[in-house]
Image (tube, rainbow, N blue to C red; front, side, top):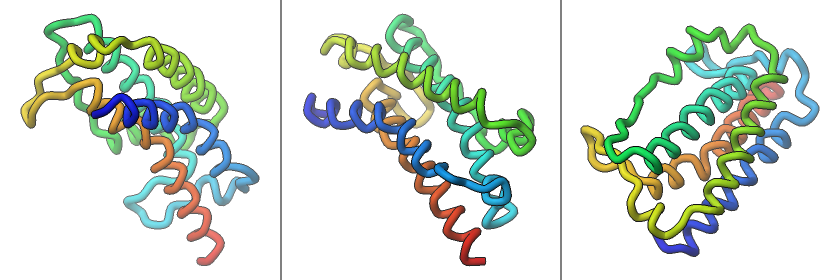
Length: 159
């Protein structure tokens, strides 16, 4: 990844929270909890996923930066949604957490050196997980879920 690509992805990462806020603007309670299919998430569940995912992502990045023997913690997002009762919980704390962790991690991304970007790696069964791969995953992550929320809302209105 070039430094220009990295800067672009960091900017995208920084814009992710605002993108989700825009996708949720004016959402009605029925829209918030509506699922386009039984196996898909409601907008409410998406927000809780973003909060949990953001915490996990933040820890992954920090572990890569400080631990030479860091291991990648894998998780099942669908299992978290059920176990942590995403469908039943209010949004406020999840949104605040998502925003706070994202801002805090963005500050770290801005301060990472070339050595940080080159050194930080974790072995996985499918290959190496690096800070560049982290950024490729999490840079667009919130945008992808904002689009999911928009699609849910469109589907809700056209049902």
